[in-house]
Length: 111
Image 1 (cartoon, rainbow, N blue to C red):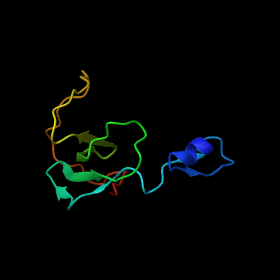
Image 2: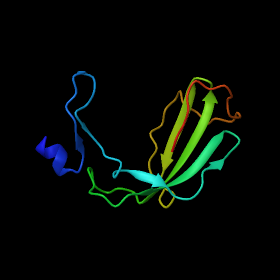
Image 3: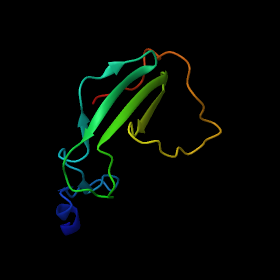
């Protein structure tokens, strides 16, 4: 509990064993910076890091979010650093998506 609260997180003991007791507050993470931009495949958005203590260090100040509504049951979220090229883990089963945004999705995205 003390480590959780020291990081500025929220401590909330739960009766459900699958629910974490320590979680980030709304004062951690990133916030939308500007407007969300619709694309043919979904949307893009710029996110700016909130000025809170870092949990892991070397946090990126601005992150580019790309959301692709690939199928009604598959959403791809990609977070990149717009100022620096970074290593991307190669994956033989995940190639570039060239379709258009799926409709009647089983998910929703809220920023």
